[in-house]
Length: 537
Image (cartoon, rainbow, N blue to C red):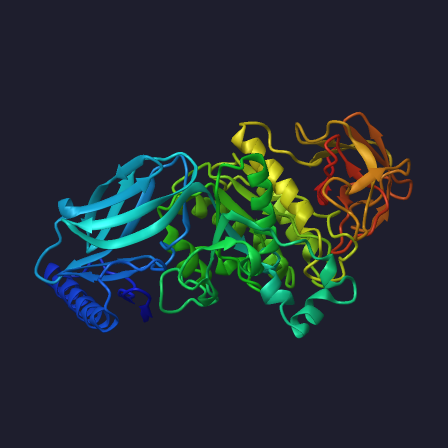
């Protein structure tokens, strides 16, 4: 694939198989170097430019007898993770012999600082590790040199917090793809709200993003063509291409730390099941695995609708999700990497939404997780502003605020904010059950009325009510559920149902699109997660 800016860029072969014999690897390297140098020389001569990297480059062409090709996401205006070792890698080849690792220098220069890293080479892939840098809105320059030849150069690289925004359409949801034409708007607005009800686009040049293309063919981390080969700032019309949730999340982080640039790597892909995002899946192969070794601040995740259509997929969700979290932490080389995810919002279109919600709740304590630290779930049962009839409801501003609050707590080494999370249900008498909640989630239990209107906001999502909490149901061994009355008793809830003498199951808001005028909250005004729970004696 040929890209032209100030020079010609040619993507390298996608992979190098480690089992090739040495002579085969040398032959491939020589061929790569020859092709890149010939094309670069021809195109450079035609355009009257030198063979240095273009400002929009993710790869760059030969310099003399040496050729270098970086991953496409290594591009102008990128953000590298602060306070963590910086790892950069690429393919390198010499036309006239073996690559000398000691001749490769990778340097970041700027903000009165210069960093160069130790470089290793294996199978024509070089890897350089540079010491950590603090956050800086002053850009750095990135240079890859071989001896005294510059073979790759970026003018503008920032140091800040980098997040991978993954999942499906409610993470991907952006103005251009979902509302940018009359037909798109008609399909995604329904009759419940208008374009004027959408959140305002963020306008902040210190938020930068890159978006993966909807393809799994032909390239490591294929960059969407709308990016023009570089990271974009979240400003003006460019902001139309970044998901509402990640940009609103970034905006809230910037409000807390205005000196810290934010980078978003958006890999979310609408209409995809979780199996596509785990090892062996088509999205994982080309969108996540190529990021291996990159240090990031964390992952934000919103996915599950596609797994709520069939019961077996919903039942398999927890196992797949815990596998995904474990593996993403391995890819990004951080066993305690913050992983913030969204529990499915209200929507009645899929039959098994409540089962996926339960799987998302259970993932918080899944025994297969290698580490449960820095794991946060945002409950969205009250965030849709009355637009739950559409699969892409409003309320991303509320969700972003809650996720940012979780990130803030992780940074401060404090407990991650959460609404009440049911832990145990104990039968205390005929037709009576006492619900207890996980430590730290049930302080100040109260009934509140959710604001399902377009005027709801993160600061005004629910109001106090004297009406008892609704939405609880109980069943005996027959499996037939009946409504239960709920009364708050300190940090527990007492459920009563005279129709069910020997209660064996309790559930709360167990529907795809539950409706209730009074929900259970805690003192932080965070709602309880829907759940189903077996009752002990």
